Amino acid sequence: MPHLPTLRLGSQGPNVKKLKMNLNGLSKNYNNFVIDNIFDRKTEDVVKNYQDDIKLPRDGIVGPATWASLIKRVKLIQAKLDSLGYHAGSPDGWFSQTTTDAVKRFQRDHRLVQEGVVNPRTRVSLFAPHSADNFERRPSSTALSSLDPYVASLAGKFLRLARANNLDVHITNGFRSWDESDRLYAQGRTTPGPKVSNARGGDSYHNWGLAFDAAPFENNKISNDQTKYIRMGHLGEQVGLEWGGTFKSIVDLPHYQYTFGLTTEDLQNGKRPPR
Ligand SMILES: [Zn+2]
Image 1: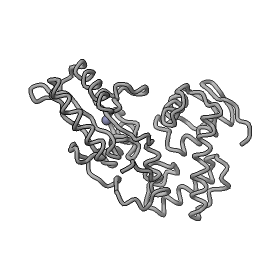
Image 2 (image 1 turned 120 degrees about the vertical axis):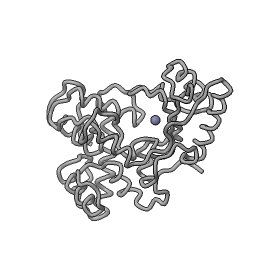
Image 3 (image 1 turned 30 degrees about the vertical axis):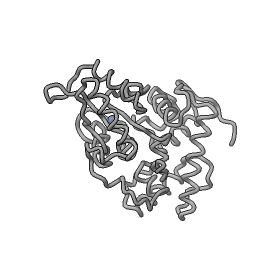
Image 4 (image 1 turned 135 degrees about the horizontal axis):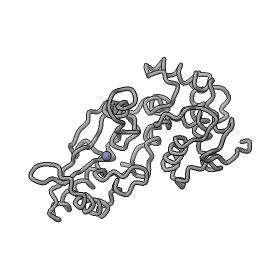
């Protein structure tokens, strides 16, 4: 790998453009930054969230570790496309026009939207085309049975503990269908309304049965009492769940998850929780 400069807010030049092409090709461009030579605030936000995903410090600065991770991910895609007969260029780690065109041809042949970006559905088709578990086509559900069995057992424990603490807690979202996530992602981008989500179908742990949302009820209605959400959050953490109230990017008080150390990209690549 040639020496690459450290890039940060305010950096300019062709390496910034390469950075942006890689982030965009890897489907990280949720805020629609322009692919040019300028490292702006939107680029920094995307870099920070990418660093969260790969468990690096969220500093928004593209140094050797962030570069290495990006280049490795792009190389894997290029090598996979090449192995399937889609000429993506030599696997050099740059999401070039040649690579983009190869992705589009792959998407055309697999009846995917031809956007030239390795979005979650494209990643599944590339790296895990024969998964029998069919997460992409499951319906949304609030039932515990829609969740991974271990996550469901933690959720059950959590609900009992909440009841023992005089909190009437109900699950408001369990498994979320990929189509529903895609609709939420489209809102404020290609359909009317305010933006409500940065996660496409496959990008959320809800899409893999590893997350649920829960709310306290009062008189059979969802309560807005913050203190109850916070008490619940601590109970969720007690049973071993990760609580959205501790998230660094967007604090998500009703959200609970258990990831087995897997990223959503790992899941798209075909990795699964241990049984
Ligand atoms: Zn959630």
